[in-house]
Amino acid sequence: MRSYIEELCHAKRHASALGAFNVFNGLSVRAVIAAATELDTPVILQTSVPTVRQFGVERLGAMLKLMTRDAPVHVMIHLDHCRDIELAKACVDAGWNSVMYDGSMLPLEENIANCRIIASYAHAKGVQVEGELGHIAGTEDSLSVAEADAADADLDASIRLVRESGIDSLAPAIGTVHGTYRGEPHINFPLVEQLAAALDIPLVIHGGTGLSEAVFARLIQNGAAKVNVATALRHAYFSGIQAYLSDNPGQEDPAALDQFLSSRIQAAAAEHMRIFQAAALP
Ligand code: 13P
Image 1 (spheres, rainbow, N blue to C red):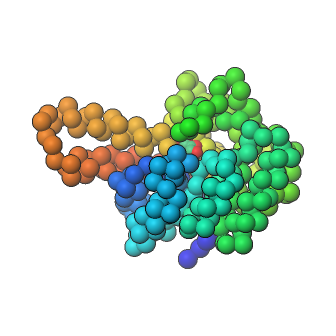
Image 2: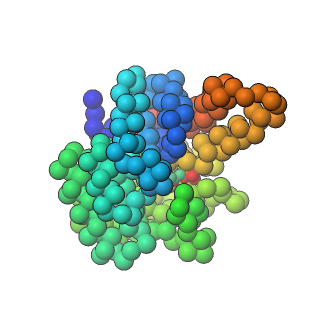
C-alpha cells in the first residue's frame, strides 16, 4: 500500500486530487468511507484540533484505527490546522498518517523552525507534515481570519518554508476561503502556477466547499493533490437534521435519523470526490 505522501504524489502525477474531509463523529467517518468505497478512491479523513481535544488523542486515534481498518479503500488520517507542537507530536505517536502544522500567523523564521521540529519528529515515525503560508480568510472550527487580514502566500517565502523545513506538502493561501464564499471566489491562479513550477511537493487547497468544477479542475491541473472540505459535510449534517425532523414529526428512532444523515454526508463527499477524479489522466 502507498504511504500518505505517495498517494498525494500519485494523484499529482495523474492530475487528480484526494479529497480530505473533516470528520466530526463516528457517523461522518462511516459516511466518508462509504463515499470513497462507492467511488473506489483513496481518501483522507481530517480531524480538527477541537475534535481531537473533544475525544482525546488516544481515544480518537484508537477509534479511527478501528473504524478504518477493514475499509476496502485506502483511508488515511490527517490532523488539520494544528498550532500546538506537542499536540501534533501526540497525534504522530497515536497513529495519524499526516499532521498539519499551521504556523501561518507566525513570522516566517518561526514558522520554518516549528515546521522543521515537527517534520523531523514525524518523519522519524513515517508520518508526513503539511505546512501553511499566507492567511486564508474565513472560519475553520476555532480559527478565524477576517477578510481584511487575508493575504496570499508569498512565492519566495513558500520556497524557503519548503526547502528549509522539510515539510511534505504545502497549503498556500491563494484566495480560497474557509466556510461559505460571499460572491465569486478570487483565486490567484498565476500564484498557483508559479508555486507548482517552483516546488516539487504537492499543493493542498483549503476552503474546498463552494468552488466550481472548473476552478477545481484548474487547481488540480496545476499541482493541487489534496483538497480540504469541511463546511459541505457540516451543512449536509445540519440541513439533514432539519429536513428529517420536518418530514418525520414525532419520529424518535435514532438509527433511522443516523441512516438519513449518513446518506446526506456520503452524497456530499461523493460529489466532491467525483469532481476531483474527473480531471485525472488515465
Ligand atoms: P471548507 O470548510 O471551506 O470546506 O474548508 C475546509 C478546510 O480547508 C479545512 O482545513
